[in-house]
Image (cartoon, rainbow, N blue to C red; front, side):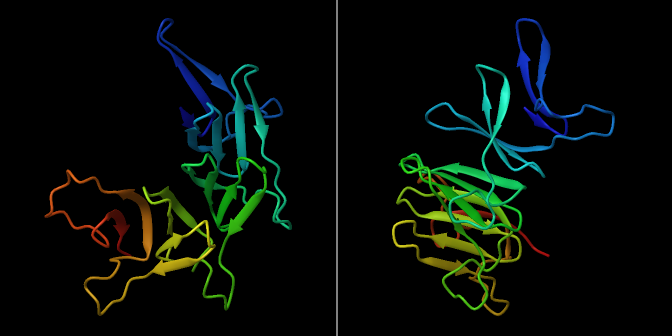
Length: 207
């Protein structure tokens, strides 16, 4: 469980919580170690996305946090101190949404990073670097829900990005440019449910 005070594990046998924070964290009444996301990948790594402390991996053998290196000026370092979303793709690569730093991808084999973000005057970039959700569909396309930048379709193979935006005069366009979550609809869903592009069910916020 992630909270404002770190990572917690509930022991059913003892009916108690075991709490974890980084070794260098000073625990006071006002201190916070805010965990926004917890994700276990196929190799049983436990990824921890924090609000202000970047991306970490929790070492369950030694009960400690391993920070993922941050290098904002390089392609080969993680960008962002606030991690808003975590997703693993079909090949084991990890994708991370961040606040104001775009979408980070870690290649499982090379261990190299790639960042998809907003670049001024570049139409093949995100409309904003403020990411709310990251999801990979069955065809391998990665979708990024953003804060006021619509829904972006990222083709990891080609690097091409296409963004869907709200068009006020078009009732069949994206209903809001704030997209908080994305999921691929299964065939069992009722045909009466409104689906974006006949396949993607969105949770938009109209502001």
